[in-house]
Length: 481
Image (tube, rainbow, N blue to C red; front, side, top):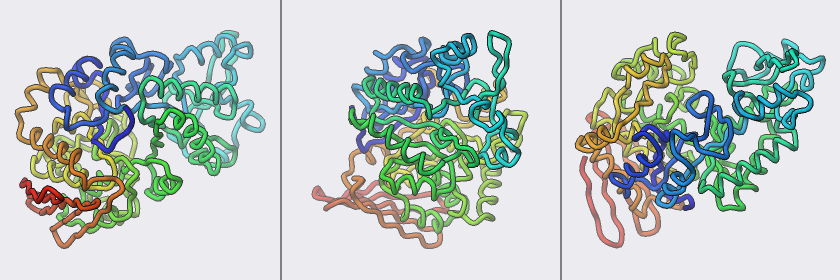
């Protein structure tokens, strides 16, 4: 099933029930009309980062099921898969074979060896300073080979995520084969995780290096387009970067919307939100919540610096059980660009505010994505986070089938489902349509139009009440919340 303009659920394979079969059953039982697509977060065998350190892409982690289970979901919902363009697991057969055989390894070209990449085998301090780093030093691990020798290998993220050398033909072939296989296994969209780190050149930031990054994206697009699949480059950066990607006709993420919506609801003004809704493209996927934290870097210059600082403080003040310690080394979370919380808890577990936030998202340009915790208006899982000491686990609750069944009785969950079904069926949300936004004091009005159809959200940003009026050939219908 190919991409269509219906809401996409984001979930791990084992977060709604124990495995892919359970996930499929949950979707068909409760969300057949509310969900059109599913982004199954990395379901391949992996050694770290909750699936984002894949050992291979040729099979499904046995704990989740197999490709038949993936295909079964794909028969009912369009699918998004993740391809980690930048790296592969250090525990993969590729890297392990390299450690064992070194120069005799069939995979010796897969990895970026400092001794070959840098003049004299090491970067200068000036070159290190230019690199857009995730660590406070040059990005590498020291690999120890079976023969006892040691060598620095490029590693941007954790030690289990070893960077791939995309300048080599062997890696380009691996990339093409992987993308082709994903398309054949049912991917309607392939999310390109960490793609901006994939191009490395001396004396650059080694991040979003132009024009090379465009050549890479076009090469990937050429492979997937043959099978009718789309690509979605993933990047958290200044809003001008995703807009530049959009100008090259690629799909993008709207990672600015989550904080702008929080700011509007916290401060009872749609001033900054309006500006963004009028400038962002239709060819995008919108989010309020994902498997990571709520991004702050994405709203730089969309909000004044003092408003960014204010909304960050408000996230801790309003957020149920959100504490600054959760963004500290004690919880393995020193990423200053994100705040870890469920979106529902960021709004103080307030049903009315949460439903309005979702209504705003569904009226925004693009195709909405709803994270599984958000689908169930989930509160912060402080217990899980304290068990793992991973700050991001506050938003990664494991729902049993019984829990999911019980959650369906909550009014906020039922009303959210109704909103999702409306977003999926009203013709005014067509991606070739237009949007009009009015924001005056605490009143926000968003209208989507396509042909003879129009639908308008009228919201009060102080008491969080709103109504929706849909009109078209079949008359006018009003929905109150």
